[in-house]
Image 1: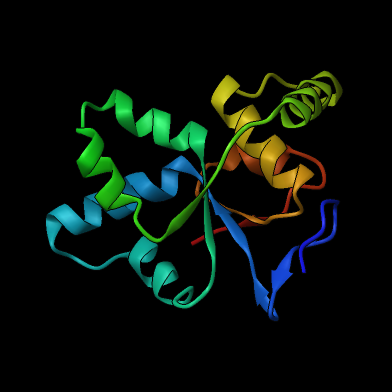
Image 2: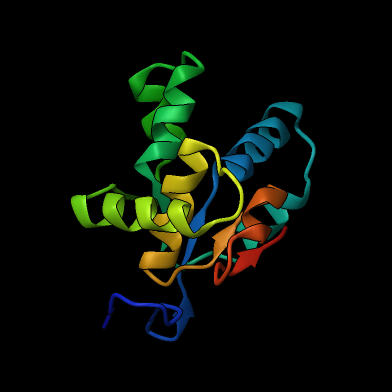
Length: 138
């Protein structure tokens, strides 16, 4: 069973995580280079677990020019997490409490992770400055 809130979410005992855009950038590089790396290694530890991706991240990848079908293939197996009204309000309040300006897309992603109690998988150091956000480095 899932609950909203600040507790870390689990399904059937498995830790649920939200993946940041930086993770997918690294994963894409590893795939195209044909060399294994930290993103692929982390992903291997998540086999069989639900993996979340913010729709914001999908939009960031679409800017890169990939076709819709290519994006759908690349993100197959990830559960899209849309940004709803309450998520937007939460993120706005989060930015108001921060002592620094978090980039707009990073704010949406951090807000989603915090509001839904999901650790964020990222290498982006800006997220480590967000109070209460659990960051999983890879």
